[in-house]
Every structure is written in C-alpha cells, then in structure tokens.
Image (tube, rainbow, N blue to C red):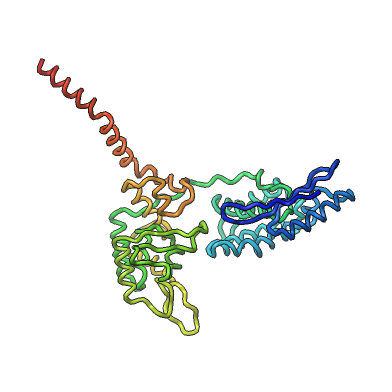
Length: 373
C-alpha cells in the first residue's frame, strides 16, 4: 500500500514523500511538490508493481534530458532573482544542446564529465575559453536541476552529479585601491560628464554593494532617517540591509533633494519619451574615469573588494565582513584574512596584557629588586 508524508522545509516549502510497499516486492518512493501529483504517482506505481510492470528506471526512461531542462526553466528559474535568470538559462540551454535528446536513464556521470571537459576546451559566448570558475557555475545549475528532478518530480532515482568532480577554481582576486589610486579615481569620477558616476563609486566603496544592486536601487529601498538601504534583488536571493554612513549618506541626502519624479531609481537613465524608467548606463563613463585616473587592471567589482579590504585593515572580523557584504559562508572572505594580521596581533597582545598583567608586574618588581641587590 502507499503512504504519503507531508514535509516542510525551514523556508516553509511543502513537499510530499510517497512510499509504496507491497509484500514480496521492492519498495518504491518519490517526492512531489503537489499532493495531487503524489497521489497519481502512487496509484500508477502500485498498479504497475502489482502487474509486474514497474522498474526503478521507468520515469528516467520516460523523460528526456531536454524535458528536464525545459521544466526547470519554466517552473524553477522564474523563482530566482533576475540577475541570475538570464545567465543560468543560457547555461542550461548549453546543456540541453549537448544532451537534450538522451533519456534521463541514458545520461551517465562519465557522459556529463565528458561535457564538463568540453566546457573548458571550447570557446564560450564571448569567443574565449571558459574559466574553471565558469565551468563550476554550469555544473552547479545542472546539479540543482537534477535535485529537483530527483526530489520533487520523481523523474530520477539518483543524481549523476554526485559523481562529478568540479574543476579547481583559482584563488579569488584581492585587487583593491591604494590610497593614491582611490583619491585619483574619485577625483576623475567627480569630473565625469556622467552626473551619477561619483555617487555610484562612493556608494560602492562605502558599502561593498555590487553594481547591479546599486543600479537597481530605488528610493523606496532607501531610508535616510534610519540610514539604511534595503537590497531586495541580491545574488544569493536574500534581502539584505545595508548601513549608510559618512559621505555615502550625505551624497544620497543631497541627491534626494533633486530626485526625479518620473523614475523610481536612485540613479535613473535620461528621460526618453515612450520608454520605461531604467537605471543609468555608466560603463563608458567608468572606463573613461579609470583611464583619466591612470588606474590599471581594475574592474567595478573590485570596488567591493576594496571595501572588504578596508574593513579587514580596520579590524573587522571575517564574520563581520561577510555580514556587510552579504556572503552566506566565510569562504569568500578568507582572501582578506592576511590584511587583518596586524589587528589580530593587536588583539592577542591586549588579551595577554590583560590576563598576565599581575605576573608581568611581579616579574618587573623582582627584576628591580635584584638590580639593587
């Protein structure tokens, strides 16, 4: 007989776990997002087992790899933040082009590994070879796709991605602005013909916000009284509260006095009749400012690294840096650890002075007494 268990995740998502047990027959199980799908599968599977038609690979033989990709793009991708949707869709369509005609039962770990190696050797959309980090992103979205097919759709019994090794990613960049570079870049941004560039760069250096987060910022997300900005479209999909302080706060207050009423964005594009409001395009102005300031080998995202580096040198702990930047794990902030070595040494020295102060004082007195003797 079939039993259906309701499961609820910490995020409140509900799924239904089905188990079909018949005496003398192997157990069958599956997980579904809808109870109606769970009941239908239970009835069909129980009937198939009684009639000797059920095999664990039935669903995997019934659906193609391409169908799995299509369902994921249709049902799962829209639930992710907009900044990820376009990139992940193109990655999934690449997988579909390679393996779409195979049934899920015929897609093995060695076959996926072969395509992983192909990722690293062929040219990508930008006419250059993909980096190991890019290949890891391709594998990550496919792995999540398989997890959905296994846990919720009941299309596969197991994911072949469990057996796939990821390419080794290089150590992340730690490029940050020196004091002279920062002064030169801010001066160049202030002189830019783009009226938004200076404030955008100040906000990036002050808060560590990503370019997409800054350009997508609306006035509804900014609370000048509480001195915070609320980021709703973040890379990890979670809302993040960003403190506003010092020059960044002052610049937003000034900007608020002359804000445009025809656009909700803090940094709006020039008005064009018949066109929807959109954020400003500052890429050409940014490149011109870098050239004018003579700052080389520097990307906009490195402003985020600069903010994190300044925090580390100012004594912030990895946990504090991760919280400011919105990282879920400490792995991404380990690259800044060496910048806080001086602060760590200071912490250890102050701790030792506190717990051994009496002993140090006693030793000093004994030494003085011996000198007199």
